[in-house]
Amino acid sequence: MNLIIRQEQIEDYELTEKVVKRAFANAEHSDQQEHLLVARMRKTSGFIPKLSLVPIDKEKNEILGHILLSKIKINKDDNEFVESLALAPVSVLPEYQNKGIGGLLITEALKEAKKSGYDSVVVLGHPEYYPKFGFKKASLWGIKAPFEVPDEAFMAIELSDNALHNASGVVEYPSEFFE
Ligand SMILES: CC(C)(COP(=O)(O)OP(=O)(O)OC[C@H]1O[C@@H](n2cnc3c(N)ncnc32)[C@H](O)[C@@H]1OP(=O)(O)O)[C@@H](O)C(=O)NCCC(=O)NCCS
Image (spheres, rainbow, N blue to C red):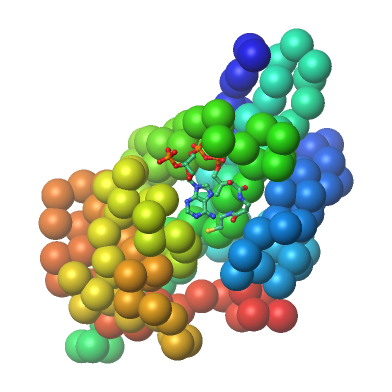
């Protein structure tokens, strides 16, 4: 397969949402509404077009998945805040899963985020999957989710040294996350 990863374009939106919907159709811990989350998030000020990526099979010119990183804040215990990113969601079409595409998407998104000047990313997800990319339990830095979540499923990664060193606090997601 001749795979490229590129920024999602406006012309891709409809197709990407179909891909996200299919990817999550049988996923555990899913409300099967992730495609709607993507659509809502694209309209918020936290949306960063450069950090909405799609893997493409160049021969078939087909979108095989999607990843989105968007802006969030960590409201610190001392009333200051730290800017960060949330990885949500990431998806790969069922028939293309377990071929390394999800891993490539995550690696590429983290690289682009760092290049764009962001220095950390938070994710709520499978505790066996994200540590492969360097994510650790967010609680190690005292970072908490604004909702009940298993400790090991709420993770973060520093894209530059000690970026989360002084970031103990509660993550604030845009309200569109919860609609
Ligand atoms: C999760 C997902 C994006 C991974 O993409 P992918 O292309 O299949 O992943 P990769 O091929 O890069 O990696 C495969 C590895 O991920 C693991 N993995 C895949 N889905 C997983 C899950 N739900 N829980 C834990 N591990 C999972 C596989 O076991 C495999 O592990 P191994 O490398 O040790 O064998 C994809 O499976 C997907 O779209 N799932 C449905 C949507 C979803 O759950 N998204 C994540 C929300 S947090």
